[in-house]
Image 1 (cartoon, rainbow, N blue to C red):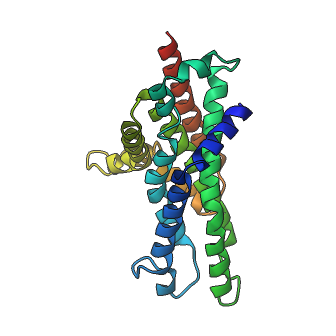
Image 2: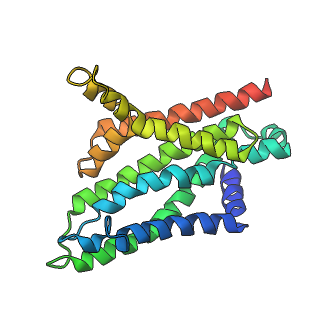
Image 3: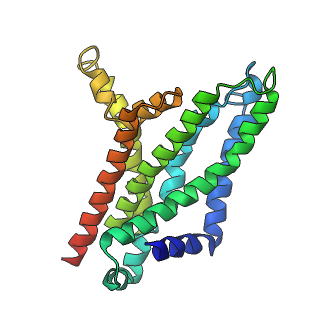
Length: 243
């Protein structure tokens, strides 16, 4: 699994794709947080990183599929997936190696956002007047959200040999799992009855819960369950190809 991990990381940064994807992510965040007046931190009268944690999941919907789209699609397209599977590695080793490599790349993209935290920390009046618990919880929520999106992206990549198709499929599934249940819960027939129950099936509900600074075990279990679910689906897809 370690060899697969480093192979994926080195492959990602051996071309400009890795740097371009991370660069675009940070550029978009920077523009929205400091330049565009509707979302700029400078337009508010108090120091807060709420905008960062509201915008980041939307950008992740596009960023993470771009990272994961080549994990298995490229292997299938080049015909190297059979060689990979016949090595002394199980399907689970291969999946976990690629999964953690993609998650590591997302974390690398998130690390520079600590500069935004430091900047807002300095802008506080008095200095450091921030809701530390909410920010800490929101970063944990972003990490767990990233794990789910990566698992979905790896699964989508295992379905198709075409990287563009994998990207679009990952984007579609991630969007549906993130906001789909929230939209369904607002259908008039469900409002006031089971709307809260339906919304709990979606990622957005649990992400917003963690972002309040309260680390609930139910939210963590939800993210882990969805991540494992898509990793198992990926394993089934690989086994199906072997059959």
